[in-house]
Length: 250
Image (cartoon, rainbow, N blue to C red; front, side, top):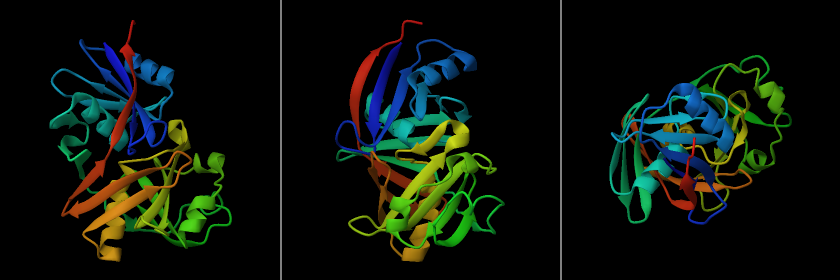
């Protein structure tokens, strides 16, 4: 079976978010896929069957939706792809060097912060707390606070959700800035999180009153995405670079 490592949401190697991509040639059980993902040690490894069923595994768990590993799989396969997933059919189209992915929107609802969340974000000026399907979304006072935040990662593991997104209005070329933390899933900080931008687009597009947004994920590796909200869908666009290809011998 062919296996790849692809850097997603970047146009240069060793930036963006690395994902494993395994092109399955025969059925494999869940435990085997989980072992491969743990061996790869990337935030996500995508497994694609010959009929384009797509699943995603972190080093610790299977997840219901992943953007950067979907982008990686579409990059490896090329052309237009329709993947059958736990989150429905996801269409990916090559658009002048960018891959545009059609994902379900995830509009968050404003809530009171759960116990422990504020304490896990020391020195942060919190403007609002929302909850989407998967993650908590925290708007901070400024992009500078998003960049400098040093969360209590152990404290975040106690929060009942997939993870926590912190965000603010951009301070440069990007319209919005974010960072994403998923310690309960074996990913203390994710480099660039496509699925989180289903929530971010749903939150920011009506507030900024912009049809299209340029988003920056301000992780150490960093990455960029283009976002557009189309009713109950989010169009996520990104670039990708293959950095490794080989074969699985197990």
